[in-house]
Length: 544
Image (tube, rainbow, N blue to C red; front, side, top):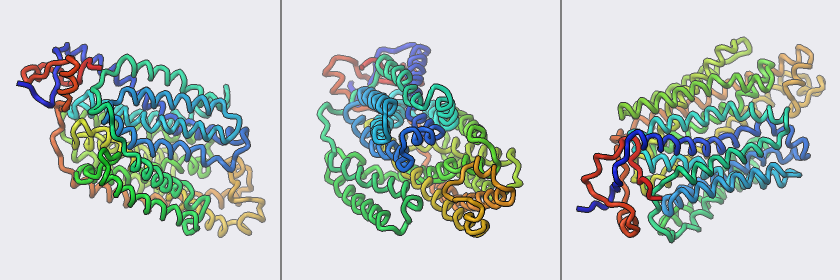
């Protein structure tokens, strides 16, 4: 008797199947690495880039353009992938990313550089989402933890490798190689996608896309990202510009909800929010994003100013955090795959994040570097224990036909949290720093020939001892207490995640694709063959 959900193909050797999954996973890791590096590789190259292209006033847009484009596209890739399949979309995302890299590499001015970053973002938003969803297409949730752990390790690796690579290119062959390097990597990722991805097709070949929802989501996201980028920095929080953006976000958000209620295929279905685990994991991910990016965005600056270390060494001092995150993420993934238990892990992760933030708030100029490295390593352990696991829990909550939409929605809110976290922490830091410098420097620094907005590590190191000490102390006293302010966010996340319902991790991938496959004569569906599937890769085989 035929089933309408679980497909079977002629049995394959388990070792062969695992080898195929590992090759596919390598291609997906390369795709994710492209997107992850693009968010970090320019951090050390940016001062040189904007200097050569005469665009210091537009420097913020180099990063903001990418974040905005990728964030907007996340839900779109997730939904469209569920409808028509992910292989073609992944190839398109890689192609867009490579095209944006060409535009950026050839840019003769800041306008073209920003255009290149927008195009990169349009592709980059899909690289992460589609990679996570494709793993859900081919590996059951029970075995997926180990793969998700390595995916978390990609972000840890890129957080260190990106700035170091950007600095090496800038000092060596030139900053344009931060874009050119994406072409061979992208070509490899594209070849891997073409030859190694054998994925199930979507539910329809003529999807009814939610254009109204996509448009309103774009407007709302643009407002939120600009609030995060401009608030407290370029514009005061009470300025008409920021207030207008807040109003725009609220209005477009309300209209978006109305549009989703009427859409046939909503880009972010409202029924997702009826699932407790989705709401808890999404809220927890958003709060973790605030804490994570609020910390890593400013720790390198603090290390340079407070300890006098170089930019390269400041990046290397972040290695303990990323190494701890990498090791913990992989270890947790294997633990979840072996035991099938997961509820307690994100609670421990958020508790470690809270503890790390409290410890970071105690930093003084006398705190030894080894202690600071220990604090940020503890933060990395907390992030590795929670971030990718929340994605797995979300994926396990929904059927395979919605896994892309659910994954994208969860990542979307975490990206929003990251943007707001960097902005809020930056605003508090800059505001406190300005007040402290005004108090501790004669005439706010004018008497010493110091302009607060123009301070660099090199300049500070060459100042008279009394002035240097006042500036360094101000940096410490401005940033350290901010970590204590955001520590409660991790505690709130821990409380929220304690209410997660621990549903058994699926050991099979259920799909309603019988009609499509039978029409093409590509497989025979029966319950009799189910037990012959390899546990590691119950995929739709070679149907594509």
